[in-house]
Length: 268
Image (tube, rainbow, N blue to C red; front, side, top):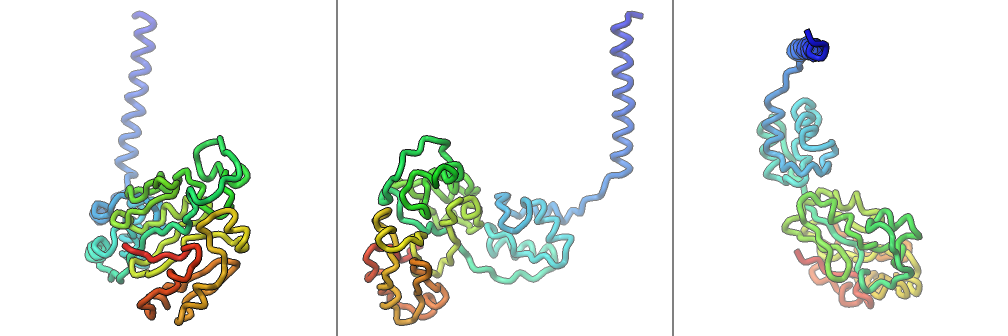
């Protein structure tokens, strides 16, 4: 017999033998999958956002089915509808979770002065490593849209002024954008919130205003004009207690008194 044919025959035989061994081993040691896990995973939105605290929808499905201590309402994008279905399948009780959406704590964009011309990789995290990026405000949005790329639900886009824009109708409040922002300027707020501070600068007033025309200057006008003590100045930045604001404020005068319009009304 020709030697090359013998070699091929031997390789095919060896391959077939080990294939059979692996098939038998797989059949013998295969672990049965709980069909309930697949049912739960099928109703999850498949965003793979990790807002539930698990590495993807499948891992959460496994956890909520197999661990009695894992609640059925951890899927933030799925909201109450998915929580109720998961609770029904797993025999658990789904407590109501407050709907949230992403809020950009910055109004810099074109209003923020450039301190340098950045010519590196168009990535916020990369730009931050190079002298904090090209913007004069070291606390503000860098503007390369890492948050937009991280959004699994297409709820963010870059606006003409160089700032991300949130589509509250599409935003699920999963927090993926907030996690990826190297400046930590994205927070999750309730749909019931009335006002928020659209600034993250902790510089003193003159320095903050020099860097950005829309910056909070920590003047305290908002705090002094809030009859409910829902606003205070911390580290040169106005901070709103949304719980007090939502419960007591009918007319947010702080918006009218802010000289730089850093405090704005939230309209969903």
